[in-house]
Image (cartoon, rainbow, N blue to C red; front, top):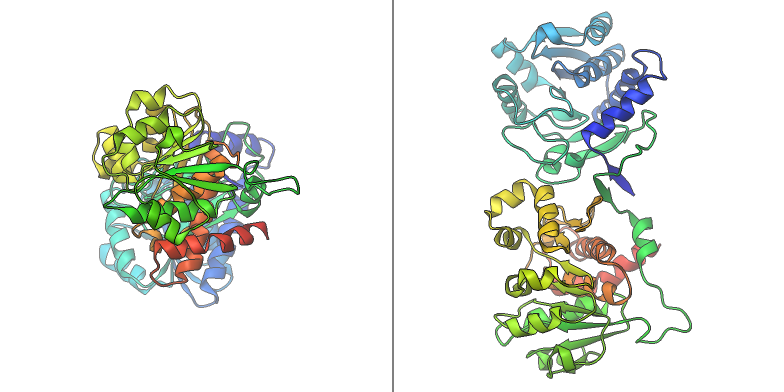
Length: 480
């Protein structure tokens, strides 16, 4: 599992380590890892043109020491100092000894020419403590870098993004590769900042696992493998769990079909469907148990999914919320559910909004949710006293009790297609019925759904039904 910690926690861990090491040893470890990553990206170091953008913080020192290592291997290295009087003295001296050059940032013409001719630009402008966007001088340089053909490597995280929240409030520098030290920072895993980070490479500098809770967790194959239900010789369809799907309408029968398709591949033993799209569901999935008697009289279930394509059927949503089993609320169900009815539930509730739905529930603009996804998912979980899965380019899962937020590392932009969320809801609901807790069910479902989307798309457009059909492939991939 990948874990990301707050800036305060990282700095405390670094101070504890530095107290046990010779002075400067920690920076040398970071610089060595940074230089190795830069060399690997360049391919051929000798004769390459490298420009370091150096601010006043320690990551500017990391960049200078890494630049010295590259210069000793034959690269032409120039450091552009944004704050010449405050650059790291030791790093600056090391670069000069290695044959590197130094240029002030205010030499606009020469610096622009350097950047436009560079093979590699190292972003050491602002460290993990930076807040807000880039200052004007740095913003001007970032604009030049964006026009250049140079590869960009960020030191610890791209300058201009918030390390703790993943927010980007102003201009920021986009990297192709971010080399981060010791542990991940939340901003490297959460959009919009994640989009600025490019590929993220973690360099071990000897930090011990911090005693504080992580801010974020990102499940990996092994973590999801441990969560997935596996039937035994004594299992039957009822022991494996039955998931109820209350979805679809005369206008949107496909939502019901897609939710059922996800549920049938999610590990539960049986799927009960309740709603007006029973004929469409049976025609596609004859193994489904169909009822038109309403949720309360549909028969025993271990979890409910309600809302996809439900239109204005508030009565069904209300009836499902009264059930004493886990409930997943999606799509129209989010709009129709009364907040107090969700808050007073004692069984788990998993809400699965996209950014627009989350914004409506919070009474803010969609752009506010998209710009501060971590804050939004935490607030929504607290307000509704529920587990919330916020869908999007980085899917987040937050529990109302607090603790680390989970971020999903799988997926593809091709998943942004009609009906994809209905498949996810059915899949997560099936995992709830199989016995997983709300956070685990949401996290595992998002992971499998993302993998299935990759397999279905394979670099080309895909549809929600294709995603559902590839869930078994994702399941097998996770199980090894």
